[in-house]
Image (cartoon, rainbow, N blue to C red; front, top):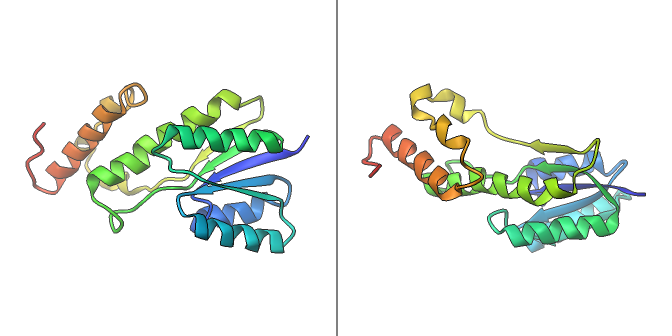
Length: 171
């Protein structure tokens, strides 16, 4: 049976670089929000002999992630999910960053873990920027309940970000 690796943010950057490596011994399923860039990534990889499927999905939309996982299962045994989709402060404000980088990561894990078998790997690529903040600014207690209440988690993260920026948080 074919081993399959799913890569979020697969249309460029770290996602595409990861796909180049995993394509040596996996069918790769690239997913991203930008269909045009996905098609270009697919063409590049196939030009080097890779077996590739692309799906357009939004990590904030659980149903689109579930469709990506289902498409991957059609190609073989899902052995890995490499989650590289995310944004930086240059790409959006605290709420958008919290939604994409936090809720998106929760959604990715919840979509793929039901199909995980022994030997499966889930790799979340993340920033170290949170480690540059004083510990008091990180809502660590909220993380435990994040999967059950993502909106609460976003609110806590945004509130702390606003405090760090010297703004009223409303919390």
